[in-house]
Image (tube, rainbow, N blue to C red; front, side):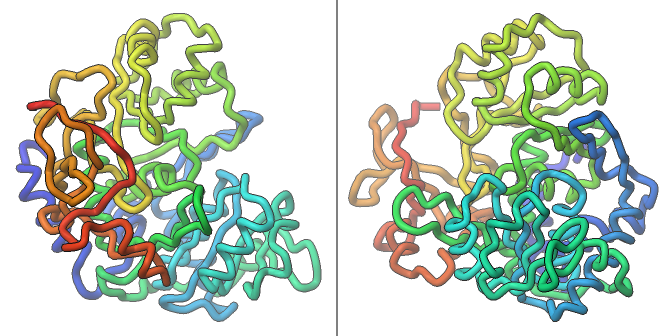
Amino acid sequence: MGTMDPHQAILSWIAEYGAEGVNAGWLLVGRHSQAEPERAAFHLVTGTGEDTTYTFAMLDELTARVAGGLRALGVGAGDRVAALLPKGLPLPLTALAAWRLGAVYVPLFTAFGNEAVSYRLSDSEARVVVTDAANRHKVQGGAGALVVVAPSAQSDQDRSFDDLLGAEPYRTWTARKGSDPMILLYTSGTTGQPKGVIVPIWALAAFEAYMRFGLDLQEGDRFWNLADPGWAYGLYFGLIGPLLLGQETLAYQGPFEPEQVMKLLKEHHITNFAAAPTAFRAMRASGLQPQQTDLRVLSSAGEPLNPEVSVWAEEIFGLPIFDHYGQTELGMVINNHHMPALRRDIVPGSMGVAMPGIKAAVVDDGGREVPPGLEGHVAIDAKASALFWFAGYYHAPERTRERFTADGQYYLTGDDGSQDVD
């Protein structure tokens, strides 16, 4: 990035990722594989400590094979491909292969039960669902989708992921428009049925903005986002964001244990680490002692960060944790930014300022902005935010209308807050 002006950078990303004839898989893997084939993309670490590095050239080859296998099952541009998988190689390969074909990726979180899985598969009209033996029982008859099991089939009706890998490779990158969908991700559905959020390819501009402005991901960083890619923060900024920037990232398959996290931070010389406040709180409760690490950036997202956890981080790592705010429908929009040009003094308990490309506001019940100090509804000015990509919920116009003011000016996050004079 150097000294590039954030607003100029945003305009160039929107132009690039929003163009005609783009492919999300090419942007995440193909272009890096072509430029620097041996550049490391993933470090996959198993619960037993096995560590495998995958380069961009390897991802290019493997996704070409999986794409060929999916294509043989009838998957084409615009079709839905779901994955109910834990962290591991089949998950990114499934997503990247779907994007290579111009298909839409539907992530499913492994903690979901049968009902949650079935609803998402039927509502999204998934053509194929890729799962593993441990989660196969949650896919009841596939809800009309073909079931692929990693690594090998569980029944005569299933296909095997190994067979996909053995398919004739699909080496092209199907051209799409920047406004075409790349992800259909369902919100948790705390009230009523989960809502499908369509993420267009051009939303990559907003993801790149957060990786650079919010997380300050730089050339030479070793990045690890602890969030699960079954959820928005892990998918957008643990899987997609680093690949988009051509940066290597760590994927850990084992259970969360504070001591193990600390061990991996040191062994892999992680410089840039992101996790939910819950993870930091668990690390604090485990009684970890001050540590020598290579960390330069600590970030948290997903829920409010209590100020005492950030104080603890300064004692243990010599760094504060910067809190960031966003939603499945938005990506990240209000942050304590790490990028030096955007960095400000941290106000304890505050989630920071709107990211460049986003205009945030606090509005009253009538959709009017309220003055500093008054509590109201946290909103995004949709018409004044170049990086606002949410166009509405999948097949749910009424629920979409509920999230906007009557004039369509403001998107209502559903959260309340206030802002100070700064």
